[in-house]
Image (cartoon, rainbow, N blue to C red; front, side):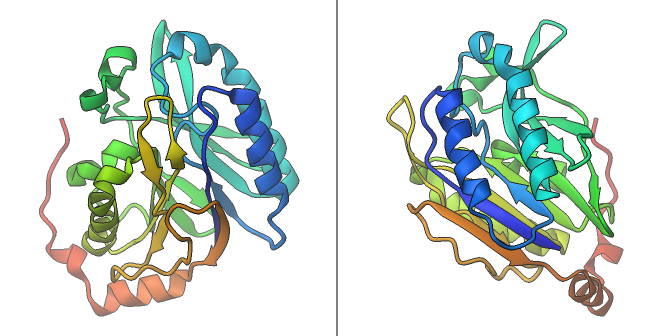
Amino acid sequence: MKVTIIQSNLIWEDIEGNLKQFSEKIYSIQEETDLIVLPEMFATGFSMKPEIFANFEQIQIEWLAKHAKRKNAVITGSIITKKNEKYFNTLIWMQPNGKVSVYNKKHLFSFAGEDKFYSPGNEVLISKINNWKLKPLICYDLRFPVWSRNKKDYDVLIYVANWPEIRNDVWKILLKARAIENQCFVIGVNRIGNDGNNIYHSGDSAIVDPKGNIISKTKAHKESVETVSLNLDELNNFRKKFPVSNDADKFEIN
């Protein structure tokens, strides 16, 4: 499977501007790819104005559908949505045929007041690309290993994020930890640049293999469009050779 990660600055609360710049970045992808991963709230930045930007949900859905069809690839990233009078930080999983699956962020970042404006989701999304099974999550979810835990139900963990530079060491360490403990590939895509609250983001987007090695080349602080090949046979052979999951604790999430 080929995965393209797009690390970019975001124009604060400017949907038109962000969709324009991501269109250009997606057009720049020359090689075939199966999955394109964008940051969290890629069209607005980490905005606490859902009452405004949820009104543009359909525009963003249609934009994702257009580019997924054109590239014949799944495109994913999170946007602001509204359902039953509640607002959500929603990851959209857009397939080339226009089929949409969603994941609503479970762990809301109360330190920044996200829980005051958005409602938490409570359902996991496991998606498929060919023979691969993928579990997409959002930013702060990375800190909660139980929610990310592999029950032999996925091969790839994905985190889309607006993770501040001040805690970038935590981001990098936890991406590796989630890969090692779950014996899976981990894809972490984070934004760069200042947001509207003058919080700087260094990116540090990465693809990590099941042994905790970074196999991507994207550099911190830099705009980047990078495509990386993942090998499912190598993953399965490693799991068979070192079957850690056979000794895993059993648990239920309430």
